[in-house]
Image (tube, rainbow, N blue to C red):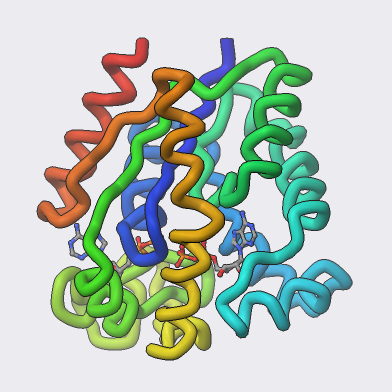
Length: 218
Ligand code: ADP
Ligand code: ADP
């Protein structure tokens, strides 16, 4: 059976940071909906152009576009062993669509680690986040600084601050999370898949807790 893991949590909780570490460790494909949207934006594809306004406002890209994008991504050969989903699903409609897609692919969600961090910490994290242009590796000016300022430790590409990490947009993204994504906590609790993880701990401790939750899920 393919292993699908959904990482849940508000913007800035550490999903991307953890997903990169865990996907590598477990040899799973890392699927970040935000990264795929940003790649499409950079390449100015039709999808990128459609998504741009929503992303800049800190709102969700419509479900039909997002679901079609993830369905296409999950059908690629590198997902044959399963995948680690980071940033998808973010609405009830996306979560239902995911269950259906995985059934067709002969798998299901195995566990949903939810990284919990209070709003004031999220604001500080996103305000100090620097992301790499090449592959979306993330750093923090104070909590996870790169060895050389402005340069990605992993691939040497330039680090930049995301347009949607400015404070007004961060506030909107947190509101959108509360209204549209937080209800998924209950959705996955009811299926006995949710494991809450304290995201205020150091990065390596959060990784350990998530790995333990995955191991326990079998
Ligand atoms: P998300 O993908 O959930 O939005 P990121 O992984 O991009 O979150 O992390 C947001 C910011 O917080 C980044 O600058 C990252 O370096 C930093 N960060 C991630 N995890 C931790 C942690 N456990 N402690 C302190 N800072 C963290
Ligand atoms: P963060 O790391 O802060 O959680 P992401 O990189 O995951 O942010 O997402 C950036 C933006 O991309 C979101 O604010 C939203 O506009 C869009 N986006 C990403 N994933 C989804 C999704 N599953 N549904 C709708 N929009 C999404």
